Image (cartoon, rainbow, N blue to C red; front, side, top):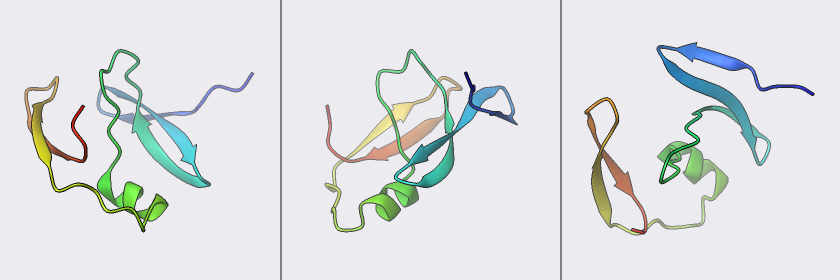
Length: 73
């Protein structure tokens, strides 16, 4: 059994994942309520899909604020 290699960037447990033949580091959070994909990666995977203009600000575990684009849940 092969385990994904862990990329050490601070304390976040990042792993390399492959999505449609594109490798990218992702933060592993098995308890997350949502999954977030970087906009540039989404656009490279689905260039013909136009995201809704709706946004939502969320607070991260580290007490920062980020703006997410796309459909609301």
